Length: 398
Image (cartoon, rainbow, N blue to C red; front, side):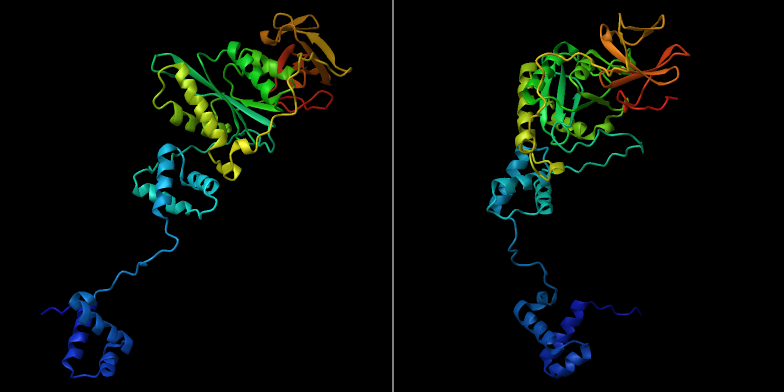
């Protein structure tokens, strides 16, 4: 015969029935069950009030939560989420603190749970990336130390015309300087457009870009293009990502993800309508969207124009007296009777050559180190890493 099984509720029921029979005192009965007298009287009162259902454990949830999110605040949060579907709980809480400073803001986790209950939160599976070393864009601490530029992947608008969005951002403040949709990536419109930005915001110290057109050209020494030559004349240093490595410029790529979700899904009816979307995104990104990298501040609060004004006339190349100078003719540099191809974008430009070892010369364009000239081999050796300036001793390239 199997053993009889008993639950906590059954034991409580036996306890109450035994007490109600009046044959055992409460103190003696409690001692037999191993409980205190207040506990015994509690279950007797529960049974008298609720019957057998009162012998079950009640919920321990609080009847009142003084810091619970009010319905008004919850509706405000949900409305902001619907208006800005790309914003997470952190950014919306930061926006609440700014617009409702007199009220206590709910926690980030509470807002996240609110979005989940309302069906406004999507769970993304984290993508696995292969382990890769690499060099990111130089960390900038002040406005205009570093600008990053790139073309967002092209797409077609509803009228079947391609749109190539050019984006320019200040790295230190995340201020989006420009988001312009073009019909191509040629320098014919990019150079004058960026010059207008230079006149409006001043000149940066460094520009970081990828190795695509119009920022670079594979047919020139140092990857110089007509656009990058123009920047060097303005005294702007160049910095580039490794080929096919967008992770070298993560802040810009993260901005591109938001730009695509906000403006190109789906695309607008025409390029003009698409540009209006770009303008709206630019205003929101700079003046409304809190940025975690900026301690939940907006880029417009931090960005200031550069004190380096756009010159009225492009400067000419000036080199120290100990450097040899040569003018590029039809893309070639003439050295001791030999013509060495260096790039057609440098035609009619003056280069400076500094001897660093016997038979080895460094070739400069303004402050930019282009290549090494090896007299013994009679060829130019491209320099992959730019870290020398005229007048400094440099090591021989291997």
